[in-house]
Amino acid sequence: MGAQTNAAPIIIKKKRASGGDGHHGGAWKVAYADFVTAMMAFFMLMWLLNATTEKQRKGLADYFSPTIPVHPVSGGGDGAFGGENMFSEKTMVMDGSGATNKNPTESKRARGSTGVDSLGGGRGAFEDFSTLEAQLLGRAGESLVSKKALKHIVTRVTDEGLVVELFATESEPLFEPGTDTPTQMMRALILLVARSSDLVTNAIAVNGHVRSAPVVLARDPAWDLSTSRAQAVRKLLQDDGVDARRLDRVTGHADRELAVENPMAPRNDRIEIVFLRDP
Figure (cartoon, rainbow, N blue to C red):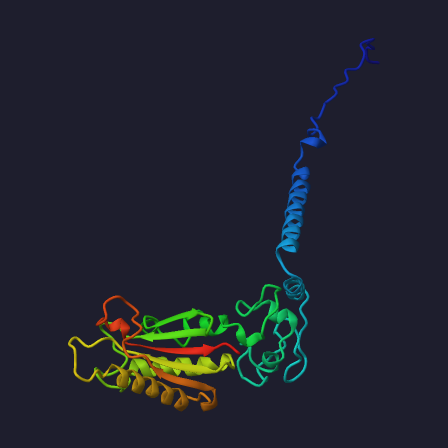
């Protein structure tokens, strides 16, 4: 029989360190970020309500509630496809043409960048030249404009309409010297304008300008040359598919309206094709 002892048993307690208090976590940062984002959105909404007209607010609201057109031609809607598809009157999508061009909705007028009056209204979708400008200046997704041709095109919107200026450079004339015979570059530029002209329905005017002669001549050829070049451009536009009924006027301005200070600079040899505003 073994010996007995009165010694108490030894008990060992192990303490495990727990994590910090809950308030030291990062969950509150997410909530605070959501709060700040919501406040920013609220102030942006208040600013938009104060800075826009009723018609513009209608356009903004329609942008965030798109409707998909289901009509095989055009439903005239304001949604993702603007009420158009590839079967609508023209074969190009999102180009401002088709049924919605002749009968634009209020929200489509509100999105126009030109032809908008002080109350936010407009004179129709055809007064918005932004799509046409983008096509001519090579900003469209599938541009028909080469980098070489871009050096000869300038556009500007005036009270008269959208002015597309095609001008000569020192190394690349648009007409054979002293004649109204267009060069290959000029033919390519006119073809571009003719194809892009289907994006709007406006009437067209053609203005011819030439540089001054280096010497004073008994019979100044500038008037006849500028007029004959404008007529040559009119014929090219028609040959490339522009409806003759859209051509409103053809004018020669000789060397009376210079583009640069030097009257004999090649830059003054130019053609202006004007898409006229609807009267």
